[in-house]
Length: 232
Image (cartoon, rainbow, N blue to C red; front, side, top):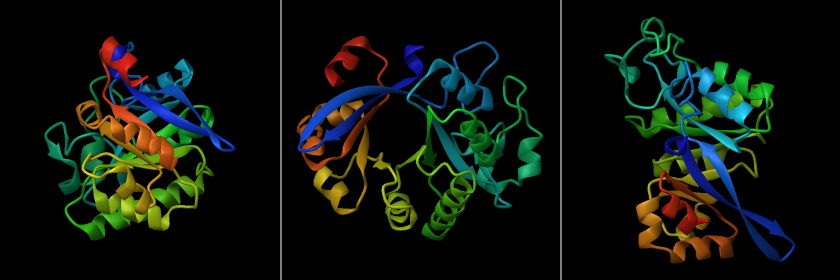
């Protein structure tokens, strides 16, 4: 199980005092269970049944404009961004499930909102496409009334900037790339950082600085017990 989990250090505010709590996010869902695979509907449901704080998923867009849940640029032998949805859908996941759409993921998320959905919007070839995907994602989340149950992460500076511009006030947005200081993230109106463990170990002062600024601190991907203790 430990290979699944991203450790999230979430900052909670109480008047002028800050208290730190530690939460667990299932990376690409809780997929290391029987008959489940990464970024599948069963992986999300498993995370919900397990009681994880959050379940992370990855969003990409097909050539004909359908938002699907898939991690990398490829699904089986097809480039997701260059292939139509029907072709991709016909290629089963390793466990026999179909490639899920974002809308199907949101339907499942709605069934148990105690587990937040952490949506990573993947890089696209152009800023225009990234803006389009941000708009479509926010619209779908609003359609299902999940604005307060969904958080967003992205490697692309532009995606996070567009989320900060277009999402409802208070939406959680964390930057993944690791090349911005907490002060820079705060200026961009992101609500937190979500950096690789080696980045935060190289800049441990960023953790306290985020706390001072009221930003959340997430770290990926923590598989070692000593690392878990260090970050806690």
